[in-house]
Image (cartoon, rainbow, N blue to C red; front, side, top):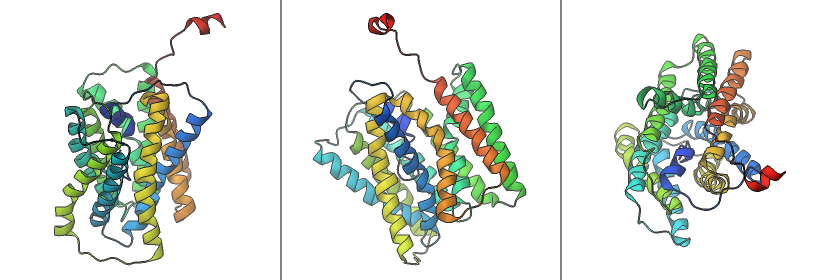
Length: 325
């Protein structure tokens, strides 16, 4: 989530597979845990910063400009690290598919939706992407799901239904809700569509190019549909700078370092924290209120995502050293 995600970050577990990585994977240690927590906080905070931005600026225009800045910065950093625009066929597929589906559709629709949808609620819907990928993989690709994954899907979607039922009865904006759901499905479809692609190296260059593709895809719609009316203020500038540098670049960097350290499957486990952090950050910074059903629903969704992610992990092989202990 290259997610990159609401900030420019692909769904990162699958992007890591698309872009490829090298190096020996380590077991989960304290450094990996801290990196995973940092990534989850940065990813989840993007919804709050986006909510602040769209309150005072046109969403598609703001997002396109952010993509240009983040993309050029990522490509510049990649060039400093010796990376070139020499990508494999799989990486070019990822650049186009994720640039359009993740950056333009997923993030674009979420930015538009958060004009009327609370950041915490949007983050919960977005966090269900691993559940949607699991369900579509089973329905479309006939993936065999372990029992733990099946239980996780059932539990996770039950939590989503609980939250949505509570919000719909409370008068949530249905247009914004539908946009959030379409956005999550679009990213899931993109993730599955390139899951067999492979390549190597140039990870930051891939990320930067994906952002530029997203900007190009959004620009015509922003120019045609949005008047450039901006209410300039300190909060807007701070939120824009934050979402450009932290979720857009820093979270991406931390993610790739984490994948390099412990592997994409183990790293993806930290996604189960996203619903909790998403609603918590929005509650603290924006004062968004949570009802009892929301709290229960978030807990249920979190358990469901964790079960799905844990089901993907394979037991570590028993080595001679381990067998002797």
